[in-house]
Length: 102
Image (cartoon, rainbow, N blue to C red):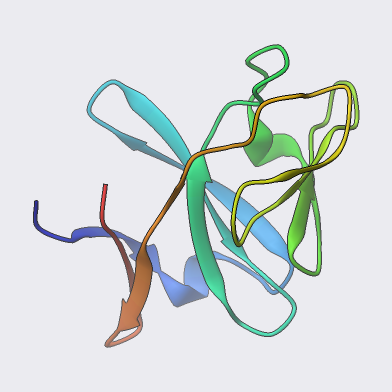
């Protein structure tokens, strides 16, 4: 499957997140504190809450509803109540654009 142009690097401030919809699915694109860009499923695995409203701290995102924390580099749950990891997707930056491989 070809890489998908998700957004400009300028669309996301450092340590922030945006929502990215593709087809019928929702994803998040996260920019960490070291200008790394990461893509993951956009809904919390606990109760399907949109993670684009969550808080990014370094390489993690916190769900805005029940405060589950996920590592954005690998999707692993760091803090419950979520029990299931997020699915993550390969991401690359080229020419000031963020591309994801869904």
